[in-house]
Length: 350
Ligand SMILES: NC(=O)c1ccc[n+]([C@@H]2O[C@H](COP(=O)([O-])OP(=O)(O)OC[C@H]3O[C@@H](n4cnc5c(N)ncnc54)[C@H](O)[C@@H]3O)[C@@H](O)[C@H]2O)c1
Image (tube, rainbow, N blue to C red):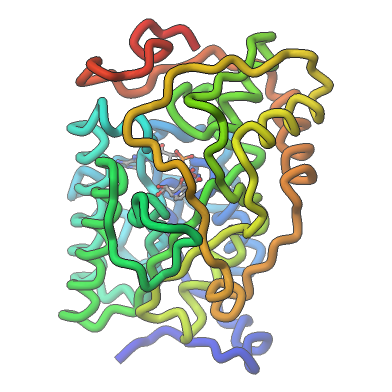
């Protein structure tokens, strides 16, 4: 049924010669732009579609076909899906903490594109669909989160991702689409949007330190995360569309180096040679305290490998951020609810 050349572990090298036309939505964003680079490096043709809400033209690889397009608009989706063999759907607004306070906008951005892309994928005979979901779908269950745990999101962002996962499963079952649901966790590295005050804690801290402001910690800082370096994560995302074993699978992607927020913050201050001390703010409503995943499946199915410790990855990110320079905070999506929202967001103190 599939035109796609599916790759078995022992014939990857020869099969890897076969190339495809891939659409990367969110291709001007952080992970999307690294994925575009990776696919081009492997000889694939790449169409990158992005509305530049959170991404930047400076991330766009000149060797891809870049289309400035909003995936909420059906006609634009129809246009970019034409002639495409494989879809990597990364476009999103990944502000988990903010999603309690801007649920209308965040749900629209995260849900509407998925439906548009699924319809166009089916109508255009797309071979393979890879979706970057999030470990937010696990909610507050006991870590490490295993892929077979039920979806129990605790916030609107996680709920939107859970909806998209379910829609992809329904469409794949009905129309026979090759698909993979990936759940990357706490990805960081060069090209992350450091101007956004609502998301990606390491980027927010780096930008504040560059502006000589203390890094903010919500709550006591004993939350745990496994930060994952982007150049480790993107090859695994690229493999998902082409490895037969990945078909129909849900796979966590990222590091198993579990770090507390306090330790990550101090480590960053040390790397940046800063004498600033963290500033503690009230805990954010609904923030999951302990969140990290099992990683075995990504190693077996997607050849995922952690090659950067947090210290190594952060050093690369800091170097990049220093070259870029301090960024003026950009409050991308307005708060729709201010009750219970962090005061630094309501009063725009970032
Ligand atoms: N960074 C992480 O830690 C992480 C973890 C788990 C999952 N994810 C998921 O991975 C994907 C990429 O995340 P990222 O960190 O690179 O975020 P990002 O914001 O850097 O990239 C997302 C891109 O999508 C674009 N976009 C948003 N809405 C769009 C629309 N309607 N039409 C077209 N383009 C649109 C943005 O402009 C941006 O360039 C997202 O789906 C995110 O939910 C990220």
